[in-house]
Structures are given as structure tokens and as C-alpha cells.
Amino acid sequence: MTGIRQQPGTPEDELARRFRAGDEQALREAYDRYGRAVLHLATSTLVNRSDAEDVTQATFVAAWLGRETFDPTKGSLVGWLLGIGRRKVIDRLRSAAREHRVVETVRQLPDPVPAGSDPDTVVDRLVIADELARLPDEQRRMLELAFFDDLTHQQIAAVTGVPLGTVKSHIRRGMASLKRRWEVDGAAPGARPAGISGAR
Figure 1 (cartoon, one colour):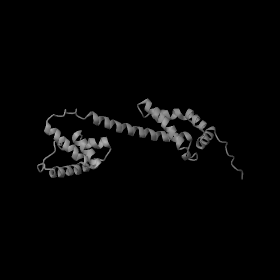
Figure 2 (cartoon, helix red, strand yellow):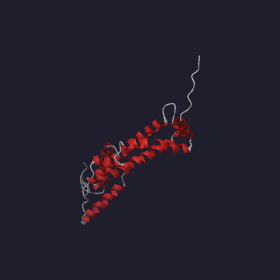
Figure 3 (cartoon, rainbow, N blue to C red):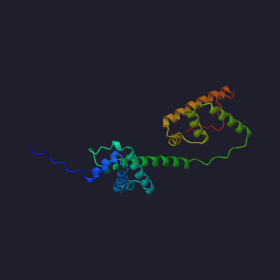
């Protein structure tokens, strides 16, 4: 039975072998040979050319740092690079979506109302600030966003990345703590601190 002759390795195979072995010259050659393919992939999805160029660079950085995970028996080097490029494009789209949500949330915020000079209002705000300072960090942060920045629960969740249910829970517990302390400090039962008008 005649044995099957092994075909000599192609230049692409040799480049892939050198790349995986950590040959820096192979990295440069891979970028020269496949960089345009990765850039084309990025520009076909991303609107901004500079974002596509950033994704291309990030793809080769990630590939170089993770070169030992490349398995030439499972596919070509260019296919592996394009796979990394697709993941980087998705990451960039998700990041852009988060940035857009934050910008839109901030854009929809009302203009700040000038603080009144009424002494009672100033004192009330100082008392509230002191009481807030005693709360756990997350509860205080949510209350400040809700009542001083006048954000809705949904806006707080978008800006902070905290789940909506957790935002509501922090605000509810924080309000309960403030109410208890407010009544203990001598305020009329059920009185609401100045500046706190209820969250949405």
C-alpha cells in the first residue's frame, strides 16, 4: 500500500507557526498580510473609521497576547484573527451603546434650579446631607441621584449600570432609614426632609 505523501507547508502555515512561536517579525508580516481584512470587517459594521482602526489594532494586540491559544489544526491564522476581530467589533458596539445611553440620560436632565437663600432651606439641606452621610455608600448614592439630581429609577439604573430592582431596593431602604432618623431627631412624624419629593 502506497503511503500518502505529505504536502510541504504553505507560506501561510509557516507564518502561522512562527506567529504562534512568538516571532515578532511574524507579527509584522501577519499585520501586513491580514490587517486590511480585519479593517474591512470592522469598517463594514462600525460607522466611525477611527473606531474601526482601533478595533483592528486591538485585534492584533489580543491575538499576539493570546497567540498560544491559536490552534492551526482548527483553522487558518486569518480565520482566527477575523474571529477575534468580530468579538472586538461587538465589544465596541456594546460600549458605544452604553455611552449613548449615558449621554442621552444626561441630555434629558432638567437644568439645575438655583438654590434658594432661605435660611430654613439651607439648614434642612445640611441636616439631610449629614443624615445621608451616615447611610451605606450604595443607598446614599442612589438617594442623591434620585433627589438631588432628580433622576428617575430607570435613569439611575442606566447611568450606574445597577439593575432597576436593586436601585429601587436601595432607595426604599435608604428612605426608611432617613425617616427613622428624622423622627428620632425631633421632626414631626411623617415629615419629609426638604428637597426630597419622592422618586419615580
